[in-house]
Length: 202
Image 1 (cartoon, rainbow, N blue to C red):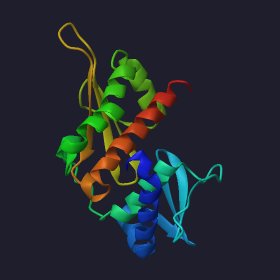
Image 2: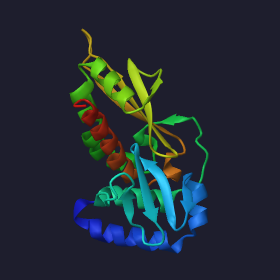
Image 3: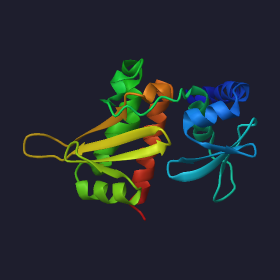
Image 4: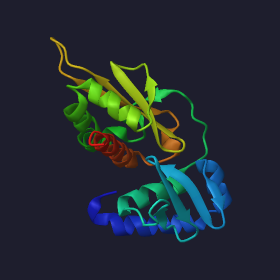
């Protein structure tokens, strides 16, 4: 999803979205479809997606969401295969082609997570709780979030000590590749981090 190619990516996503049956996409994505609109929660924001137009609107403000966000949601609808969440943990590298995109993923997600929260785990705890995360048992502190209905994402942090600097990781479910292309997880997890960072000022 290179930035210079977004218009082409959107056009392709819309064509694929229109070619699929709404009812099939609804059950595969775990969303509600009624009166020509899908309803779902995206990064804790209630949104509607019109079918077949593929317009994505913030249900609170009535405004269209950003272009990259729209493409991500359309990809979720067109890529989802309906697999159950397997509760088997993997990292980004274990996704198909994950090694190819690991640097963009680290730059968008892992490094910012360490930079903002690594030296103050209480800030991460506060942000995770404010954003509705589910506390997990990984690392020194971890939270699981659902940026899209069937995509659990767990942010894990280890605080610094006398021997090691702070560190972080992001855990996905083994079913992740059935819901989004690998490259999209760099964008999705980066957006999730941005939402957590935004919780610090609230």
